[in-house]
Image (cartoon, rainbow, N blue to C red; front, side):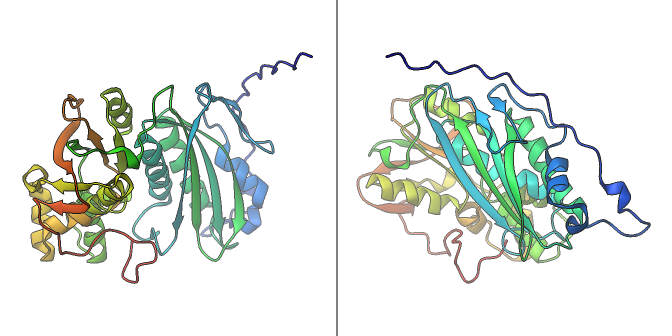
Length: 347
C-alpha cells in the first residue's frame, strides 16, 4: 500500500487590509484597541509584511505552515511584561517589538540555528491606544524581516497590562546544535559581542540621566550577532549560550550542565571608555555591568583547544575540571545576574 505524497503548497501573497482607524479618529484622541476590535487590530499587525521562502502559509489561517528542510526545528519562547521587562515611558512601542525579536532570535542563534519564523502573542487592556500595538507589531515585523525571518501568526487577548510573548523557530540547516552540556575541560571559552552596555543603559534610565544615549539605545534595542552562532558551529564549537541573564550567570548554566568549571580571564573583558565614564557618573563599578548585567544578547561558546576562532569571536576564558564560574580563579562576590522572581529585579 502506497502512502499519499505530500502536495506542494504555493506561497501566499502578503496580507492586505483596509485601515479601520478613520471611523474612530477625532482631533486629540487616539482610537483604542477595544474600539478597533480584535481582528482588525491583528490584521493591521500583519498587513504588508514580507515572508521568507520558508513560510508556505502565513497569517490568516488557523495555523501557519513553515518549511523545515532540516527535519528539526530550534524553538524558543520569551515574554515581555510591561512594568517588569519594559516601560513605555523609557522605550517606544517599536523598541519593545525589536527587543522581543532580539531576545528570542539570540536563543536559537546561540544553538547554531538561523531564525526563520516568529509567532507573536499580544495582551493589553481594552483602553490601550491601538497605536501602541501598531508600534510593537511594526518593530517585531521590521526586526524579523531584517534577519530574514517572517512573522507567521499570533494572537491578541485582553490583559491587565501590555504583554508581548514571542516564539521563534530556527533552522539548523543540517548543523549539530550547540548545547550547554557539551563543554569539556581544556576548551576555550569565547565571546561574540560585548557585555555590560545594556545594564549600563538600564541604570542610566533608572537614574534619569540624560547622557550616554548610545548605551541607553543598546538597552532599548539589543543587536545580537546572529551569524556568530552559525560560524561557531562550523568552527567546531561544542557548547553555547546567549548572554541574557548576565555573563557569569549564563556561563554558569554551561558549567552546571557540562559538569565542569569555567574561569573567566578578566583582562579580556576590559570595560570600554563609555562604560567607564557612565559608571563614574553613577558611582558604579563598571565590572558589575560587564560580569552580571543581562540583555546584551552576546553569544558565548566553548571551542576545542585546537579550534581556530572565527571572525567576531575572542577568547575570554577556559573550561577546567571542577565546578562553577570564577574570575581569574576567584569567586566574584558582587550580585549575580537576572532572576525572573528576584525581589530586586527591575527592567
